[in-house]
Amino acid sequence: MDQIFPEESQKRIAYLSTINQAGVAELVCTHVEISLRLDSILQLIDDDSPIIIAATYISDLDIRNTSLDHDLQIIGCRISKIQGSNADLHQGLTILDSSIPHLTLEDCTFNEQCRFTGTEFGVANFTASTFRKTANFSELPPEEVNIREIQQNTAENAARFKSSAIFMGTSFEELAIFTGVDFFAGVSFFEAEFLNGGSFEHVFAKIGIQFDSVTFDGGVRFQSSNIGVAGFRSAEFNDRTVFKSVTFGRRDFLTLRADTTHTHAEGINCSELAKYNESLELELFKELLDAAEGFAAVFTDCEVNGRFEIVDCVATNNINAMESHFNHLELELAPSYRNITCVLDDSVIEKGQFNIRQKCYIQLSESVLGRVDLQSENVDHPIDYLFIDNTTFDGFDFSKHRHLFRANDWVIEGGILDGQHIHSPHLESTYSKAKEGAKKQGSGLAATEFFIKELRCRRDQYLNDIQSHSDWRSKLKAGYGIVTNDIFYITSRYAESPSLVFIWSVLTVIGFAVWYGMHPVDLSYQETLNISYHHIELVLYRTQLPRTDLVPASLFVPTYKLTESEISIGGIEYLILSIQSFTAFLVTGGIEKSDSTVRLVSSIQSFLGTFWIGLFVSTMVRSFQK
Image (cartoon, rainbow, N blue to C red):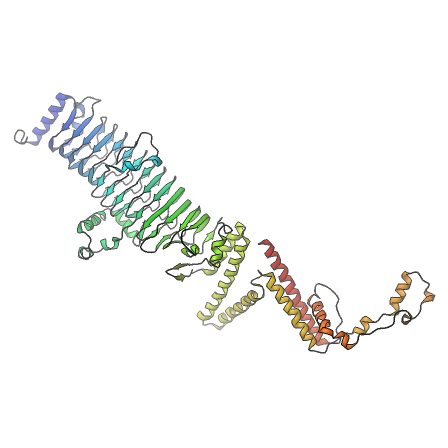
């Protein structure tokens, strides 16, 4: 053809002439070395005829600023470059089994269904484009299919992106089907919109995939996918989102960030390093990789209004989900070759389920934990896999999980990592918030146990203050706090043990009775036990006998006085004295005591008795509340 039409202008005229004569645009088994502009041939073809390009090589296909009312079909072609910025395609776009090293479809509107199956793309740019119908990058699903009904076979003959894929600000108004797609370099969906759902099942992303500031108004599903370093910062999920059997991150990520020599020494192919460096040319994707250093996936500052499931997923590094709000979170990480932590610091989890497995940890520092159900699989102490620090419990059912906390001796702060307990930096407030959450939920037993832990942590803090402060006033204040704390704990277990208070009360009565027995005490039994004439007079008066008939009392009842041996049998009189002194503030009266020392000791015992009785009543009330 170069011999017949040596000039490019002659070739263009020949193409246009042929199309004009046929009234259709069908390029089959053709070699087009010129820049083919579709807008120049639109007026030459029939209105309803499609534009078909099959088994053809085109150096440059230009549809920029074109309003295309024809169905465009590209099948089995190699097109070095497609330029389509600001194009408006009113009919369908089909690109099947083709190779396109460079594709630019920025600010385009696709009004009908688009298919990109079986095609290998180099650099692909769909920035700020709108797909009003289904955008399908793998086998076409049945009509009117729901995102949850897409079967695994739709992953066949999927598209492949050999270089960077850019979908920044792209809007998918219907389904977006990326099932089975391979991304060999970075891919960015920054600020994209999925208004009716998306499928990313069986996706392979060699470097990573970015969904920062993305809105998912419809359900989205990631299943059996390897998505590399995943970024979902500030994303919004308004329907069910499923990550099932997904692998986050890649083990050689840090190696890729090294120089070529080191990478080669680690056995990494230099072509992979080239893909990584190419991904860094995307500024937003580079920002993601920087933010994700140390993490396999980032879900920070997300708003999740639907059900969010991470089930049986593997991560090569920790997962960052800080400062996010989850309406419903189901979390289950699969055991990996290393310890993995899902960091939920400063996040709100209203409800959900945590399935705890070996080597899989959940960090909840400064978080709000709602109606979350804890499940475990082959884990002896699941609570040890939760790193709790200053966590607020709002609706968490402590009663339902009582057996888990009891097995852990009600220790919830910090966590166990490799057999070592990593303590929370806020011990007292951690237990205080747990106590308030248990009280709000109505679990008295949990509230009691956390209250005891809170005060023991306060004692430990006093001890730390003594060791850390050099000021003697501060040391003295902390020492006083330790003493009062220990007394409160020993005497009543922080007002939580009525049996302990009762034991101390009995010991107090017995102790004072022993003291009374060891000191001379004048109990004045003579006056108390003798019967007087006035008593007889009162009796006679009540029987209405004449007063002139009064006689000495000794004629009726002889005066009787206890002997010393009778008084001292078993020391019972001292026990009676101790009991009456113990209850003197509540029950008036008692045995008269003539000795001033005895009266002082008895008064002290009366004060202690009032304290013990009040404390006993308080602990009993708290016990009934539990």
